[in-house]
Image (cartoon, rainbow, N blue to C red; front, side):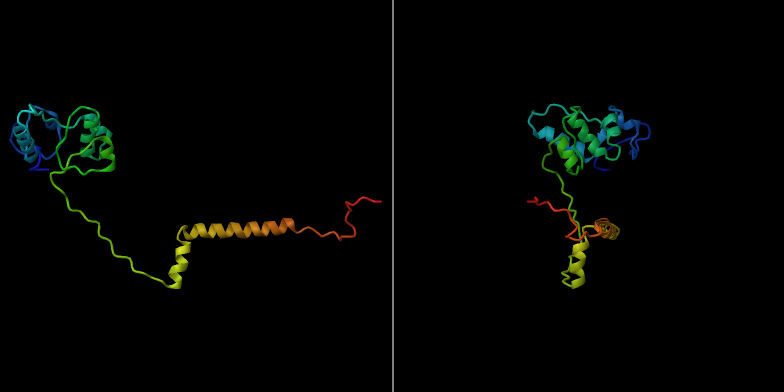
Length: 174
């Protein structure tokens, strides 16, 4: 995230590219665009913002959200460990449930490009729409069950018929 937010190695003064123990050391100051932006906000606040303390996200939130350092930072806001976090955050549904967001400083113009579907009105396409809810294997299973249940119902209901003159009558004899 250089030059947006970074720390320097205290010994060599090189920019740190890997999150190590130095990032959790608050005596090593943050540098970059975001700290400068926050300092200017503090300056223009006219004394409403008295102090800004920069800190790294907590180790616990990093354990809870190991795949996203940004979600881990929002977790710290939800837990009340920090008041705000400055960075290139994407507003996701998960993060929005954890904390409120302000108006973004910068927008990423990301578009999902997909080919425009054509209109195919052929008979084959219309038939395939009917079959789309299930896979071909599942359709095969459904048809097999229908055939087997039909055969079983014929098998068990095919009883020899008793002629009507030999059936016991339910009428009363007079």
